[in-house]
Image (tube, rainbow, N blue to C red; front, top):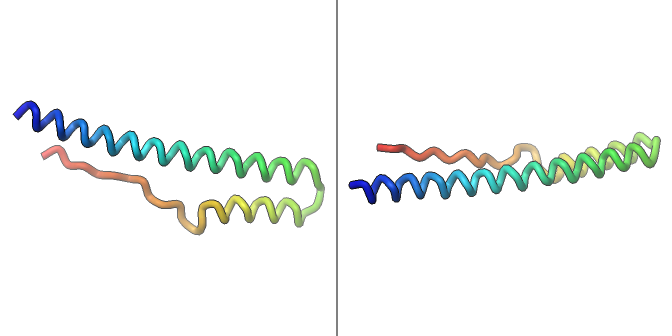
Length: 75
């Protein structure tokens, strides 16, 4: 019985680790693209350059970023 509970907890923790890795990757993309936008705006006063950089940020995610939520029941 105890082994089954530990296996279930282990599985839950593995899913949580994968979710967190995915979230970290998403934040890295946001940070990198934010830097690209800031560099484009800072190095050029061109509205077109800023718009192109902002479009690059949107393209990296598409319309909706993928959901990384995992629900595991403890029954």
